[in-house]
Picture: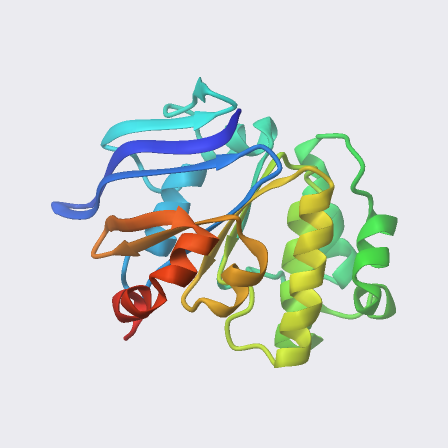
Length: 233
């Protein structure tokens, strides 16, 4: 069964069309990646998925239910969590306060503050520190932990490894594997292939606001030279 999908979606910024008849789907407990160069439409698509960008035509589906008309907070209460590229950490709140904010969503489930600290021990070490004192990797852990504390069924990740050191990237990859093993469907947006090839079963490539390729990871590997051309800057 499909956990989340966009079907033939058009999105506009004013009069300029940003997404053209885009369709993408994520099955239950599946990791799917969306790959593309800068400006291809990746973040626009994720914002359409969570309701921050209006869908002019087409449908947004959650568990095969049409949720196109729902607002972002309503989608969050259904079980869709968005971890944005810029992380949006509250700098004047502590790490623990940043995490506890997510619990106001009111969804119950297996993800608790203690489990987040178990997944990311560094956050527990820095629980009383301000959000603005964290490194980039620690901020990404915090943003991911905050998303998990809403106990989502679908997790939207916008370039979670961008600009991070290889050791931190490896830690985040392992964390995403653990999260997915809990049955959470994940739509992973990245600019390059390295992380998606480790995590995703299926891949979508977006360029100029259109999905220009889709297939399994094995099919992508077989067509890798062309895909590299499509996503290169």
